[in-house]
Image 1: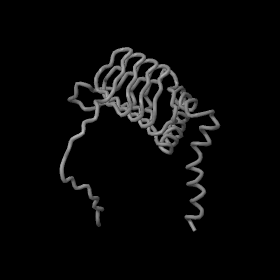
Image 2 (image 1 turned 120 degrees about the vertical axis):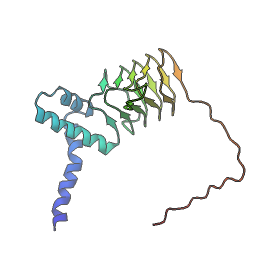
Image 3 (image 1 turned 90 degrees about the vertical axis):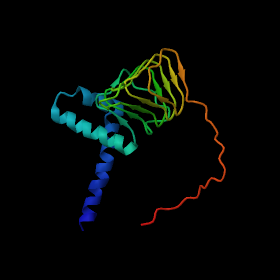
Image 4 (image 1 turned 60 degrees about the horizontal axis):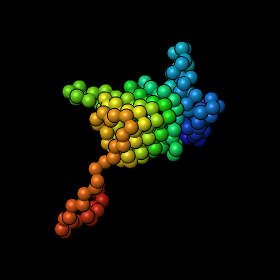
Length: 178
């Protein structure tokens, strides 16, 4: 009997963030309202709504992320992760499954979050990690990992794939048994 009563509540809980964000004319406006909100309770409510929406649609933009303008997301929010403390410049184009992540290891030289300049193009699956600065008008190729500074007007690509010839490879899949 309780399952029948609770099911509509769970459905409403699933739909509420979407409805609320639609009512506020989009995720970006809701996020801006959250950041500008002075009332603690209202800010926490908007924070919960934004986090629920991000979780439902599989992306994350940190609370302390600095966005100088809304990034251009040609394929939507799919798999995008931008950690808190990161900075993204104006007119940046970000494709799916991009990670802009902080390095929090205390003994690391690159401890901190990335700073990305204006008009950068970040290809699908790219990873930018640690306290690195990406200059203005840069292109980061698909599936490229960046862990060092990139000057203005540069293109970063990953190393050309190498083919290693092996004999007698056994690629059988064995399922895990309980």
